[in-house]
Image (cartoon, rainbow, N blue to C red; front, side):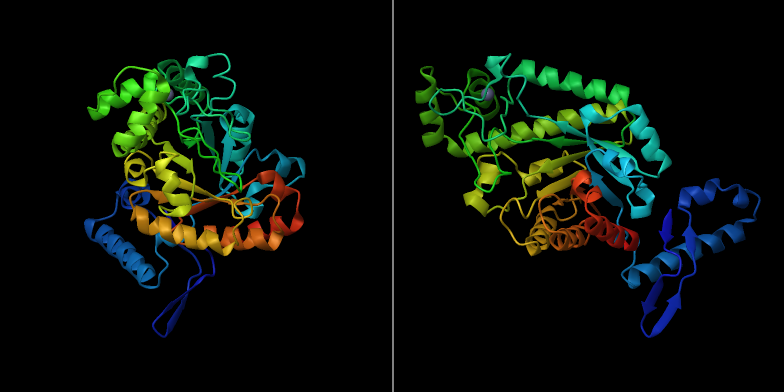
Length: 391
Ligand SMILES: [Zn+2]
């Protein structure tokens, strides 16, 4: 459905048309419409032309369907809103993104009753809690040692078959249990830490599973020997092939997860929460170290959700708009952009700027981190209401 808010105005040339209400059904909905079923063909054609004309008028006025914010979201459980006696539609919220382990049937039911869809955040390559019990999946650095936790994050070896099977099972179980509208892959990167002001960017993973998979995929042969010696050969003689393969590995994980999502829940989306760095930030570390190649990922993910946490990354709120403009140019429409902006531990005015920029083109959806930070602050709640209700 294409909908326009009641009483909105469209300015076309010098003529202002005040729209009282337009609800225009899609082509298929028109076909199915019982009101039309018995009409003569001429009447149908007239209605279809009318719809096309209306869409053209709106496009000309810059108010085509994409201009309406498709997703007015928030991240984390809506419980703080509900505990405070607040309702999602009063803030224009129509989507919630919740950690997979926190989703339950009652949450989905109540969200649906309030007009909001539920998307699951899935911790893809988060190794904490797994690698301690399965040390073969612990990321190995270029010295041959286990790479230490990067502040609070610990990754996993993306080539370890046991870890892959473990994650596949968790994803299938999640989708079997809950009718979510989509799955957002989080921690989709090689072991590192980009969310802190000072990034931690180790070289991983040089265990046998990774080196064997690299050899098979790239055709490069790395002589047997100590891990440190093999890592030296790879980084000094085959760096480009290595980094290309690492990027392909993450694209393959995204592809595998999307196949499961589509098989279990046809119509559900696969999105990625990802590091927002440009190609030049931190000397190209987004692709070089984290392994995120946006061209490859755009083929496997429906939606990109850059984690534009301006406060945490020591940037001004205006950076959110600059970063999204860059991402829009980079993706060129190959995937949707629904950023996640920072609401916690920043002043309300900064949050409002970040959310407003996050809600603007090229984004067609937005959410904030976290729901709790917004629920607890009346000024932030009003900022959400202002931006989402006008969107
Ligand atoms: Zn590995």
